[in-house]
Image 1: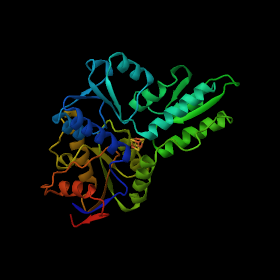
Image 2: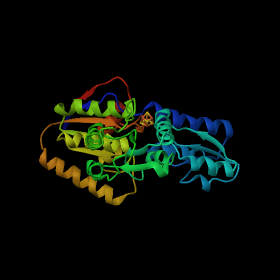
Image 3: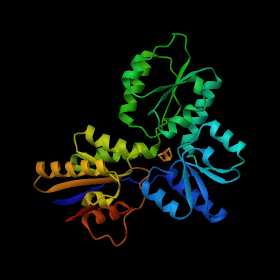
Image 4: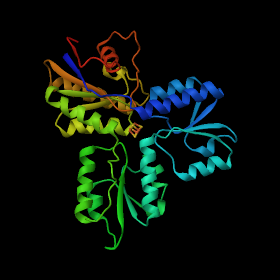
Length: 320
Ligand code: SF4
């Protein structure tokens, strides 16, 4: 039984994601369907499905977009080669890259032009990392962990600088940077932190609520870096935390067709109930790509939680 749900603040949509979704909506209004979107515009399955229903076609690569068609690039940013390919195919390109990601690209380019080797702290395969790395592929080394930072083998005269993915764990990245600074005291750092304010302040909000809660639900998609970092933030503080797509997963109905994941969630729920048979103070938050997904007629506990998450006002829901 849950008798109180605390809502993290801030939570949910960031300005960059809002802007990207808005861009696709406007493109659909202006040009009409179909509008192609390279990669998921944001890592949120509900937003993607909604835009698909309105005429957006999501593709993995710009080379899949027909010649002359309109294509929107996602908030995560793209490598220069993507622009080149679109140029060859005479695409009508609309770039919805978040300006905070663009800032990191500009920085990487500048470092490369000045002859620096760039350590890019981030997660292999994440779209943002692929895009940033693409600015200077021959001068960039990806580092994901402290162990990888410790293992870097570079000649002592190497001019070194670092940049980071915008959606990392503040704490873990701090450890990687500490290791880099210790090993390479002359390493150049960005003048201003690359992890964006929307990422860091959602992590701080989770940390702040941990002493008051027994369990954290993070509403977000599996491929959302931000949402995963919020789960890790809670777990690092000793609080069980689960990533769910929407309220259906709280109720056990499941909104995904991913059966192994459904099975895992069922087991986690069961384990939690066995360990916590009494009252429960729960917390809820959403990653930066978590949009308003609850239907207004939702009457369930889970629906109320999601609706409250979408409302800017409440800090908690009592007697749920
Ligand atoms: S998480 Fe940060 S960098 Fe990414 S889109 Fe949002 S504001 Fe921009």
